[in-house]
Length: 320
Image (spheres, rainbow, N blue to C red):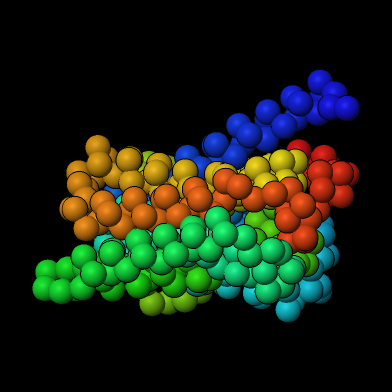
């Protein structure tokens, strides 16, 4: 029997997931606005991981430090950093210099969902149901529409940006699979990703640093807080904590809201109004995400290796 305390905890988890959706969806819009106004992809990347990495370094050291990569081992830590750290983020920010924010907010999460479904079937023996197959087909067709819309003439640069977003999805899609496979909770994953991504800073200062006058100091501070604290620390922690509370059957309903958020915000914030083919592509991807995620039985979530609420409660409660 569900107690009032448990119901309240689940309501908080739903609110956390909605906040994460807003954070991840708006990230494409805010980052696109930044790169269009003089703050380059390399600058945003350095701001993001310098802020998150330095703030989370004490937790990394307390969990085992560099001897065992914050308690997860270097093999695991390396792949977590690749799939959600500066390689993935660099592709995202580079794509935003060439393609509209709505493309990034749609192609990335769409590819993530496809990778997640296929990975759950291959790695955890989840059942490939008819809604999942229909959803995957919808997402792939939508990606094809976007590729066709940006494949020629003046849209060639947009296509290159879309390919960057496809790379984002291919990398980012493996991150939740790895943290499930290796049983790494949301906060620890954010700690590992952020601290290991500090390795990018020497390359930035050697090859890409343009001085601190690329924007007013308060703009740089705001982007450092938004990129490092809001996106990396708050976003990843909320998503990971809520996933343990709600379970995969409920959590799977939220990713489709990311492209909806990003596409909607890009219209007033950036004036990016999609064309007919792009609208068709967005519609197919978003519809495919909803179909694939909405009717996922709880039993499949267990088969997919996602622990039940109480499996990781002690650790999550210590971090909440």
